[in-house]
Image 1: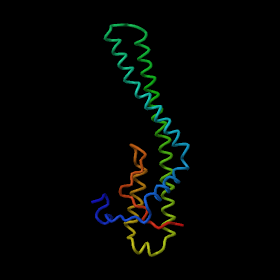
Image 2 (image 1 turned 180 degrees about the horizontal axis):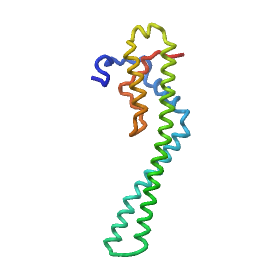
Image 3 (image 1 turned 90 degrees about the vertical axis):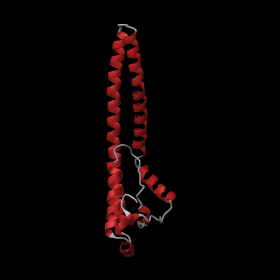
Image 4 (image 1 turned 135 degrees about the horizontal axis):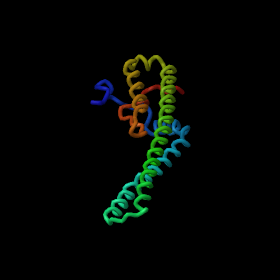
Length: 166
């Protein structure tokens, strides 16, 4: 049974997946520059976070050798600077991603509202208003609240059943 219960189990698509992906791709084109920046920040963050265990290993190696040197102090300082840098890049990434996600959700809600208001009355007679509302609200809320990643997971979303506004 799906997340929304037995009423929404039948998910025959009006539009093929390729068309839906093209629509999503067009929606994301507006955010191309920000998505490139996010990708670069993630790459830099990953490289910096990968180097932290190496610094710890080197510091422990110096402690085991009983070498009291400025190199140990430099490793500790480098570790803390790297930790602050990782925190900063992760915060910057989150800040940019929240902006993109918020704008995308707003855009999706506006497009959905426009599609619903421009649809024939026959669509509203065929589909219960509660199901339509539930689908729209839960899907956009899921996109807006997804804090772990930016994937647009729509295992229960079927916007293809909504009428096109064209």
